[in-house]
Length: 191
Image 1 (tube, rainbow, N blue to C red):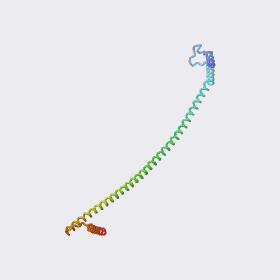
Image 2 (spheres, rainbow, N blue to C red; image 1 turned 120 degrees about the horizontal axis):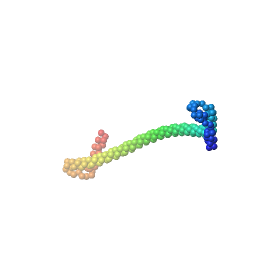
Image 3 (cartoon, rainbow, N blue to C red; image 1 turned 120 degrees about the vertical axis):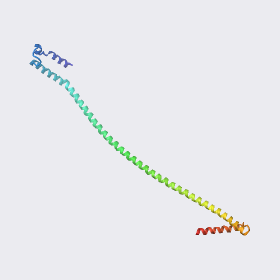
Image 4 (tube, one colour; image 1 turned 90 degrees about the horizontal axis):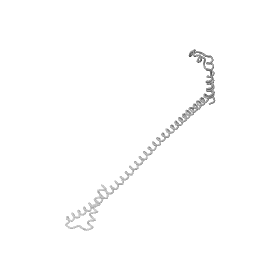
């Protein structure tokens, strides 16, 4: 503040140009006194600006430049970190895809093994059912043959009784006919 008062007092005390006092000479008239005072004032203003204004302005510009440099360096570092993070994410994504493919492959293998197991069990079950059906058919066939044999014995006894005009009802006659039919079965099996 003190400096600005001093500068204003010098400006006010400065002599007025002769051309302004005399009223002539025009705009381009050279006045040596005015030129010296102009140079002195210019140097004085230059000194005051250099002492009090330029240094703070230069310091502020240097500080701003340093802040900008720090921001640029920080941005570069953040860009490098982002690039590293992106690369890491890409690696993790690749690993996740590989793991997903492995899981899908394992699921396919497990599904195929399960399918084979189910098919094997179904085959075994169908074979058991077929074997059971064969045994049932064989049993029913044997029962049918036994029933047919009994009826044949009854028919043979009835036919023989008519032929002989007597009734063959004895257990010995029945045994004789059953033995004869067994022999017929044996001769059919051997043939």
